[in-house]
Length: 335
Image (cartoon, rainbow, N blue to C red; front, side, top):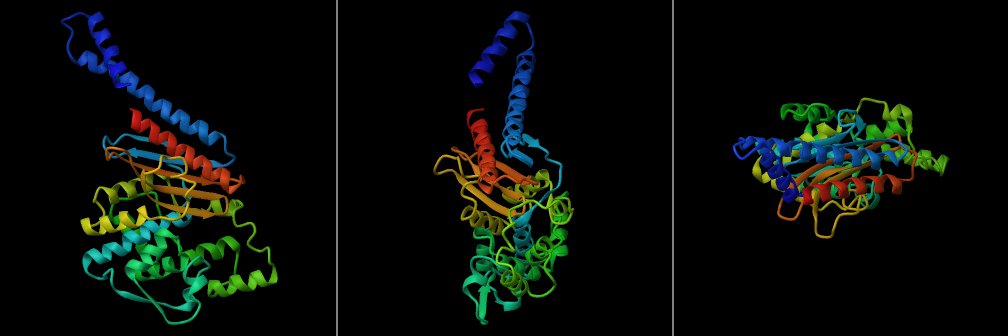
């Protein structure tokens, strides 16, 4: 591709005459580059058009700063991708000396939120985990109880949003912890979520069956939303060391590289061995994955893909995310 563009520029320079200024050849390359950019966004729109629902994408090449998007300034429910911001707010307190990664935190059973690890396996009182281990569970396995313990430790959702504002991220807001978000989505009464959810399930075994179906009131709610561009801004600031100290940046990115959820999303169609530091999110008609891909040679690409209001099977939504990620990977690898 590069050789063809250079040949094209040389032919134009020759047609203009040997005495033409050098910048004429450079200018001739601009339309080709713009055409490639439009081609990438065209492919993003084509992939998204195959899915019933709304797809938002923001892609950023950290080497050049080039950005590409689809519905990139539209608000989408973050679901569990908000946990990146919670991690950032906690690590800011680590950087300031208010907390340490080794600090032990008690997990009150009343904080239990249905999720795979803590609420499912540590059902008795007497659990304490370090800040580092809570963050590992929150980001690698999306444990909701660990998330809410850390959200409270950070000072609550408003404090997390305040941290986002302090580092210059606009268009992303955190209004609830996971218990509050799930309580609103499933219209559960106030009280410890594990108990109210168990009561609802006992009364109706199929109560949670529509947990992957869209609800208009939810995806139109401005609370706990982000634009794809805002998420890309957050990831860019983190990876480039503009949000946290070098140690905290290394810790956070390292944890995100160990993410165990969403294997069929950003990573689904990428070649084996490609490093992806990412965080998934799923609720209702929303299936998300956001993160940073490291290409061969070390080039890093930030990518945020959100899907909302989609009645399609979860597998189809995940496939759309995977196809978008692979399209971006190929574009940056070969251009």
